[in-house]
Image (cartoon, rainbow, N blue to C red):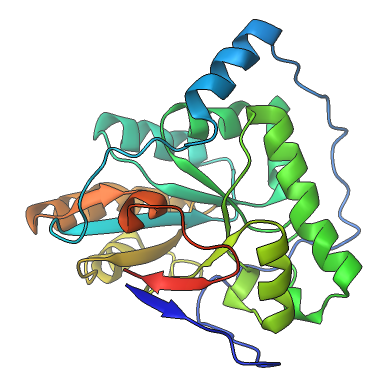
Length: 260
């Protein structure tokens, strides 16, 4: 396992995840709270908290594991992606943007992600570069997304991915206060740039045991690449796991992880 410590006042900008940020003044459809029946909520919490997502207890020190991660959703193609993953009994990790969750028709897709055994992570509210924000703005970006996901699903997220992979000591400190590990990647498919399914699949196929693969479920070409990704890595003997399953435990808040 590789754990990166953040040097003071150093901005780390990794390639990839460079989807355009959501403008701060972007109009957001009025959010209609979804209210669960109290008994249904109690069952959800009992089954999910505090050990959500429930690990299938793979030993990724011995098994060839790979974690597929999807950023910037939920979007119009996320439902199709979930259909593909369910058909193949594959679990993934979704780093969601709060504004996209708010536009998710009462949280239908967001709840489905959790209900089908996938992992949810915090990808900020509107996808800005976090190091450039004030403390209050940074706190707002993480807490507002945390709040809406908790309200819709009953789940408190345990990890985050800074937009653009941009982080520094300030971001790490805030993530630690919020109880969120910083999850990066070591395989960048560049699917935001090259919208060709075969190209995306080829890059994802370069994963090695312990890899975290960066993908974006807001692109149709990425979703179209998923069957080939699963076939390619499956033939190589890989087991598809969530980020938490990859490490076999909850990653430490504030720390940055790129691969096992």
